[in-house]
Length: 240
Image (tube, rainbow, N blue to C red):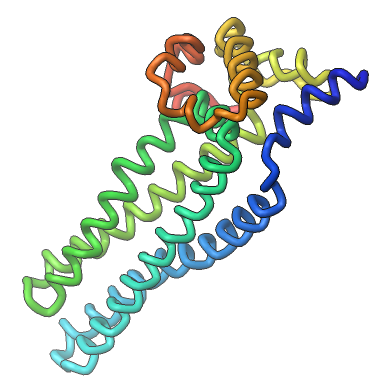
């Protein structure tokens, strides 16, 4: 690879004077977020156990345990949302081209994660705080289980997007054409023209230092074109 090509790649991937700060912020955010998310999925199960014990025995002590742990769960959930936002801020504000690149292929699962799983979970957490000890058992337990399921669904969508970034199934030979050391990733389901358009636009916005502006541009999507003819592919219809 010549010096000119290395210079282009340097402009594309290292386009911010704050890269070191971005790396620190993103790494801390990711690891802290992972810790809080783990507890967010574990606390509801512990609360469920205490509530079942209360319903069976009638001992108010178990209800108090459940309420206390619910408050801890709510605080932990808020901290998870904050640390997740830190990660997104690093990608959006300091590495805007990363978001542009991911959104071209990971839009569907990340959209579902944000609009269905995360928001739904947040609403149910607040609703559960209101319901615990006041509503009937089947309603309270139903809300708690639904919140846990949505939290698990959120993790599934994120892991799906991350897995595809490592193994972009459906891209066919496009990655191999760009990087000869990579294999072919299944059928050629991706639009080659849209891929080249995306690469050119990323390079253009990056060199101009206006990646964040591109995110708010109404013309960006039309300039890229249709990336995958089936928006659910490869998330649901195919496996490597």
